[in-house]
Length: 269
Image 1 (cartoon, rainbow, N blue to C red):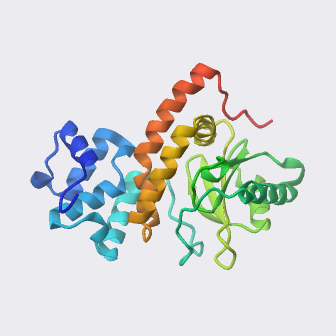
Image 2 (image 1 turned 90 degrees about the vertical axis):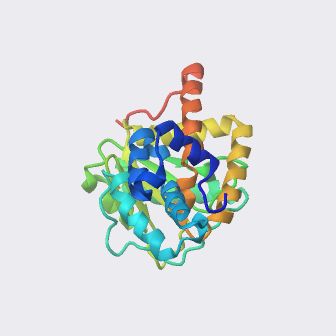
Image 3 (image 1 turned 180 degrees about the vertical axis):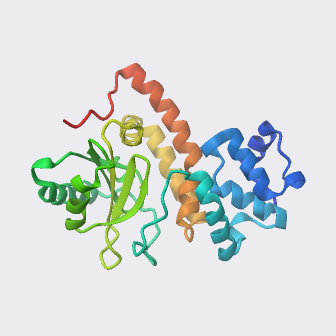
């Protein structure tokens, strides 16, 4: 790709009957989003904007990427509240590294810390994300899923999470994200979700499918290495660029779940 859109985006534009030259990058992206939902990503918007200028998306100035992110955010995440003031972390390393056996140990340490803070009300706590899959290359940040009866009942769990050394970053429907304050290493992300909700179920299904399918795991590792080389200076673009793979894998995982009898997250008593 040089001064144009990628083959994958070109195919989706044709399928949707869209011509960027006729409607411009933003309007084209909105219509593509209407046509294919989450598969129309921020990186697609970058590509459309860059193609209109005859440059590659990685060459878009940082100020333009920030503008596009801000415009796309309410479209892509309509149920997400603005980030919590004071929760920003600037300058954190953005890298993909080989699987580290220390990651499950870090999860166990954080699980113990969270369980001690929550006491008798400790819910189910799971290791999720790429660091939970043996052999999978990943960003060296452990993702933890805390499943509660009702994520809206923040008084029942949020003070305990904060006392364990975390701060609230984002609220959205059925899910909260917490991470360490800027003075501490970014070594963990804690996700609180409804025990009976789809957010947590999808996270566990994706993890378990990768664990059971080493060939898909290897493909995912290769994709991550490719994408980090393109988007090392843009965390959001790196994450968004994985969307097609993640959605395709989840589609396959749903079939696998029905075939094998895989059961997702049980309700918390």
